[in-house]
Length: 212
Ligand SMILES: N[C@@H](CCC(=O)N[C@@H](CS)C(=O)NCC(=O)O)C(=O)O
Image 1 (tube, rainbow, N blue to C red):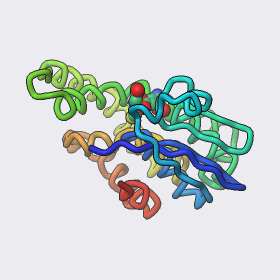
Image 2: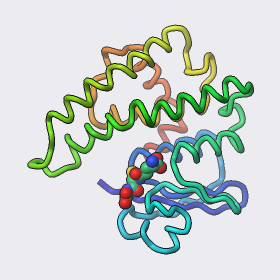
Image 3: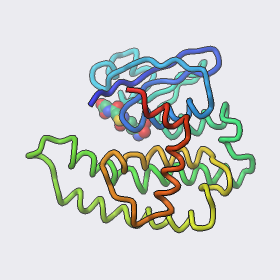
């Protein structure tokens, strides 16, 4: 697998590094917004540990964003910032919906991502003799609870905040994309699956995911 983060510099919107699903979270948004950005390939090995890079993201992880004088790390924080500043309708109008967009974004990384990563690591990334089948099983079981929440929520609405696709959908779909990557069967949660497929049917997300 190739990991290559980026930093971008441009007059209107500068974005940075990528790494696995997380860079795709940011890249999806940049494509959705139609922002001008420059991507700077950075591996998540030594490239992201240089003094120059650590000045941008002291965690030595990707992605990171530079936009004018602002530098940011954490993919969800980057996406929420980009949506608010450049996202047009991607950023909801009302304060309540803005709060709900933050809620769903935080929910994605706290309720879904850790379990999806546990499956990815223990099924695909570790050398076969280091993989932990029990950890995969536990993660698959743990996913049932948040996926039911998502499925129930989508029973009454097409998108997470109602009728329109917003940053809430983009952020949660980007996290949940790992489910497809690890071949986790979502058919027990058909509304969540339909919603996820519709999100990935958007040309911007397809373009972001096509980049190697
Ligand atoms: N919570 C961070 C996680 C970033 C992260 O873990 N990035 C990985 C690549 S997916 C990385 O840079 N790993 C290299 C390292 O930890 O040294 C985010 O969402 O931006």
